[in-house]
Image (cartoon, rainbow, N blue to C red; front, side):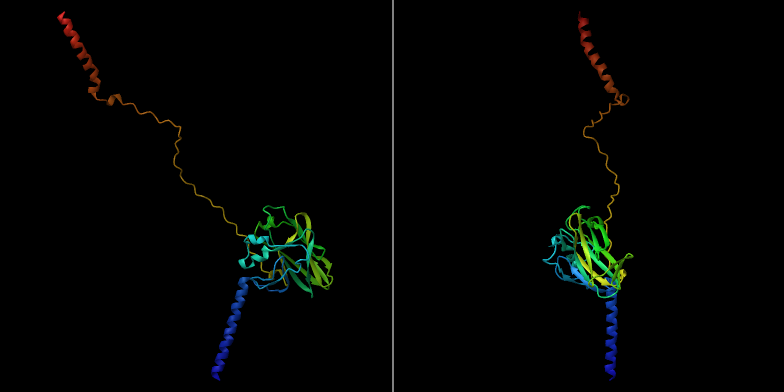
Amino acid sequence: MILRIKISIGEIVECILLCLVLSVRDVIHGEILGSVIYAVNCGGDAHIDVHGIRYERDPLHDKIGIASDYGKRLLIGRVPPEDHILYQTERYHTSTFGYDIPITSDGDYVLVLKFSEVYFNAPNQKVFDVILNSEHTVVADLDIFEKVGRGYAHDEYVPFTITKGHLIYNEEESIVRGGKVRVEFIKGNRDNPKINAIYAIKGKLEDVPKLPLIQMEPEKVEEAKDEPEVIPKNRRPSPSKLPDPYTMDDSALMLPVFFAIGAFIPILFCLCKL
């Protein structure tokens, strides 16, 4: 009997330790603290991300817009490799399109919209608005490339409140009809609207894990080095120095005198014979 009690206490301790480990893991990985009510991998298949969110296959498949996996050519920055797929696939349309999010109870909610620019290499090429519940412009003039560049994840966080059949966003109010809130991507005059993935939770903004900051590589600054003196190729060499006359040997100076005497002696001999 005593042995059974010891085993039971050991099992309880193990369970407590396991719970602590899982809690620490959730904090480290930024697990969702709210209740996920809707999640879709737009333009792609079902997926479970590193936070445990289960994304459904796109319900607009073969219905509205165009699904694209063009982004699979890129590695997506700011997210772990397991979740690249959420930003590599997308749905776009040549006109306005959207998704209906079921809302069944009052409370605070957060809508997370996931984007990445995988095609354009400059800003002002794809720009569009996002409207919630047909009335609230929650994202205006979204230019993904201008926000983060090409091949980087970008999330938009939209907190709102549902109370007594009304949606409240930034002190603006609209009526929720049919128990659904629609998020729409508005066609503008600069290319087509798009979306990579969506999820919504019942909770607060602080319950949503955020993307890390983009790490900018510091510019390399080379240290100044002493450069060797460069002599131009067309520079003429300086003439050789003239010998110092004061340092010359005296015998060298007497040579002309000896030559003159030698030449004069024969002439003098001839004159004497005459």
